[in-house]
Length: 332
Ligand code: DP6
Image (cartoon, rainbow, N blue to C red):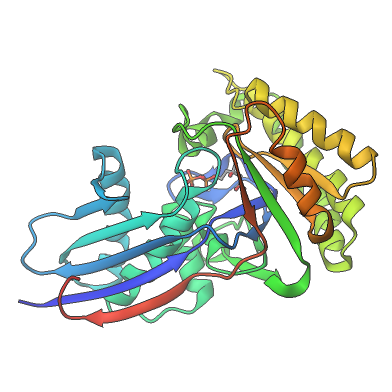
């Protein structure tokens, strides 16, 4: 009996310049180039064993058997890796995250980054980080960015091989903190994959995408020059544009809850009062408050006083995907 296994860990990321909509859904080539910060302290650890004796993929997520939908998505991703490796064996997979999934904390990013690294290594493929990011993108667009640490760009790409991520600046470049104000730990009703399909139904998606290069340029410059005010203005505009597209698609998607709006208004006031803080929101109701390290203690204290804030996760810039073990012979 032959078993080959590997374990990898990866962190989610928060997009400062977001993508929404795909130019190619099958290849998950995003509609526009995006830019994110990889998040320390949150992580997914995934172990993959290919086993000639298995009759199908066996997938456990956070201690329970995966849903049919999750099995189909993970197996489709493994099929890609099996075809690249020329080896048909099914796999047993165990994945564990230390944060709630499906609530706008990009669990698919860390999950598919860790899965791609663990499965490709277990399958005997030797890939550099650029190749890993291309492959991870096929599982979840934002996962391509979680291959790298620090501040990371994902090119939208015209064809499969130019839709890859690369690092703009390492994690220690700028000590920003993402304080994630959690207002719900429930799974969101419409996942990003379905949301991307709806993006073209919004009349403002075309202008959001057309203007993305301008926003990306301002954001990259703000990061490289550590200009907090410039960063704050552009990432709030980018997030609001994406939510405007979501709200004006058909059917409309409204991810923000009353508590989300309340936090966003507080953040605006805090910045007017001199704190270095701004907000950005993914496809969920939780609010990512990006702040300078110096002001993060005061922002966290004030966030915890707001009604409806259930928890606050504190995430400085983090590292990219890492293999923690490889080529074990028996499942642990
Ligand atoms: C709002 O990467 O979650 O977080 O490929 O369907 O998994 P799938 O989409 P996903 O989309 C990311 C959407 C976003 C913005 C961003 O991270 O750029």
